[in-house]
Image (tube, rainbow, N blue to C red; front, side, top):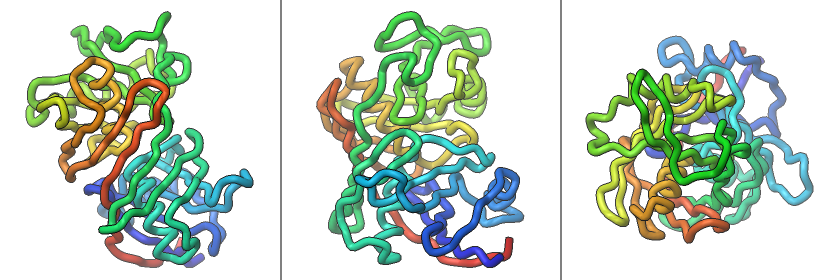
Length: 276
């Protein structure tokens, strides 16, 4: 079978995007892992699929698969690429889209100058909704990792995040602590591990070790989770520029009960086809 695809990225967080409305294919986890391989496949952090919605109020169904073949609930950088993809492919002429994901509905707004704003929804802070093993909801939690006690925030942006504040993101022990936080038993569905440096009340720096992928150049949901944790701690104001290795995201959050708004770029790299 001939499979048509588009390669895209959002701040270096890269994706293989498939239109599964005009072509029909079902990929197995081992096929996704092979396609994700940067030496023998297309190479990507996540695979994104555009599908017919299952609910009447959604424009599309948006599904996300990590490089290890596992399906996940949400991806903010991917959401921006998704919006640009369906618009460029003329699957819709709308500038405001509602898409369904495994983590809940998302609103995507295509702006001028190539930017996309994503209404990421209201963050979930209750431990059972993250999910995270804790008796009571708190702003931060002690987490035993590699023989040391860390203080982390636990936030769901449709997918689970643990956020650790550090002094200098450039020297963060991402490769050492990231896998151990990701697979910590208190996170039953594993977790994305964010390493946050607070620069000022409206600026942060972040590196993220993503569940099922490893460290990426950018993580949209991770940036939102870090913003939420930092604001709950009193470190951030309601608008923050988050600097990631691949670029900057603009974030806005008015506090509990309100959605996080994320604005950033999305770019097409190339189109191609391959035989499965």
